[in-house]
Image 1 (cartoon, rainbow over the protein chains, first blue to last red):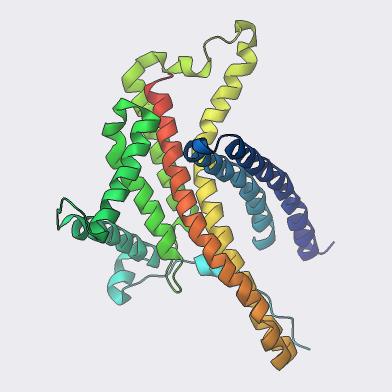
Image 2 (image 1 turned 180 degrees about the horizontal axis):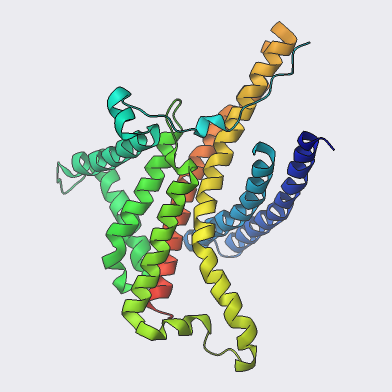
Amino acid sequence: MDPVIGKDIGAGLAAIGVAGAGVGIGHIFAALVSSVARNPSARPQVFGLGILGFALTEAVALYALLISFLILFS
Amino acid sequence: MAAPPTIDALSQFRLATSLGPIGASVNFTNSNLIMVATAAAILALLHFGMRPRAMIPGRLQALAELCYSFIADMCLDTIGPEGRRYFPFVFTLFFFILFGNLLGLFPYFFAFTSHIAVTAALALLVFVLSIFVAVTHHGMRFFTYFFPQGAPVALAPVLVPIEILSFLSRPVSLSIRLFANIVAGHVMWEVFAGFMLILTAALGIAGGAASILPLAINVALVGFELLVAFLQAYVFAILTCLYLHDAVHLH
């Protein structure tokens, strides 16, 4: 198999891992919206936690993307 | 037919010496230049912001005071009363990363946080500082951190290695999070810009008109990258505060 094709296939497979983080981020913001809907006055604290959770979850997506870039470009 | 044009996404992160022959002799790179510019920008904000010393602040003074109070509140809320002594460190860390990310967004400037060497250095600094603080506060009781109180002793052989591994993965995740976010943002810019060139090269005038679509995506990405710049600096700082809270208290 041509190594270039192998790289492309590998990079494509590695990027599948981003899907899990997409589900996770949707989950976090669903929880954020329903908690603000229940108790609008709690919005400042809940928003900060939501943003922290979003960044931590997106980090996992970026680990997968990083592996994909490493396979593709080196 | 010539080979289809490829998109060279990663050469934008290559280091080059700046400041002409003086820079080349000491290997002062474009990354170093932007780091100096970042430090100068932060110092300028604080110096010129606080110069009026008015009781009722004008716009720049209000901005400088907002920056101070944002980090001070974050330290005190997250670390507790001992947070005051870590405020200068967290302030420096947050604004260095924030201004570094923001300056990297300008065209022809260099995002120094896109290098794993820089982010790993910052993450290792936070990691070593948290261990140092924990050991000076608690001495040898530092190792009880890996066995949370209230857990059944029978689970210890499983729990302690997992806790140690998750503790050791802190600098790894901290550095890779910032690095991957910035690199991914800049690579996406480069890729969509490359699409514009490929479309124009392949389809001529029609391609030029169609390349408005990648341009629109790039414009949207500018907004997203601004958000990412602030968010990643905030997450780095808040995680630093959380690790320092763990070091000072629950050890």
